Image 1 (cartoon, rainbow, N blue to C red):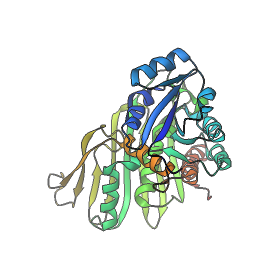
Image 2: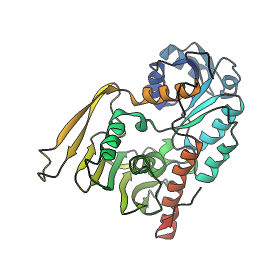
Image 3: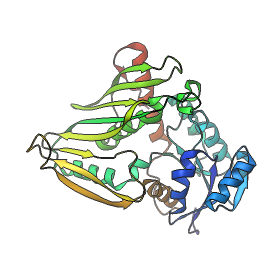
Image 4: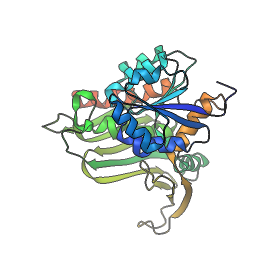
Length: 338
């Protein structure tokens, strides 16, 4: 798409993450304009539009997708509706930024290969656009850490609400799909490759049937390992560490970086075990959702290449599939090739 300065966005649903974080962030993108929001309930759509200052409100997703004045849509629906609505939006001629994970498994995500190629689809991992992740990868590439051999991650929160979609197994609830996808993304991002095999230990909630605690090891080959723990029923915690032969790097708030505030990373050469001699780098204030929206909008406008395509999203789902297959088999599982 050329000859335009801004992408006109429509928002699918009034989901909480969109209302609180993503939509206001998209509105701050220099090449974006949010012009419509939709819901299955017109009153809710109208209330959301009024709250955010959006001109148009639609009482169905289909009605909004038929609007010729919308170029792209943001899809934050529950996991089981990601592929379905992304395909519908693509068929309607819209570009789609879809919340993670792109689908329930790689087979479902592969349906997105049928999308028309003149419309872009990207999975919404906002962390890949934050300066702290980009700077951490730059440092890893520089050799300051030596050979990065291990990445260690933790991501947990406590939520036992039976009415929350994260606790509904039949629509893609559970910790691995909700937050385990983030350390998987970290491994792929910092190792700049794909894991060869994974092994997992998963414990499930007896009421919900969802995975509430998972420990995973992913073998990226050449002596490189990703190790992480995720839980939907533990204390709020998150961290990502890159450990190399010469140094260690820690992203202090890797996943929910505060919007519009500075963040920090630590680079530790191991001089002191307590880390008090580590170097702290301050990353300037930014909003990772705005950075993601801006990157996608620039790709839609033809000002930049799409940084992450459908194949990248399918590759992530193959890793998540292997984690669940390891739960079933009780051993190492090879990550399927494309």
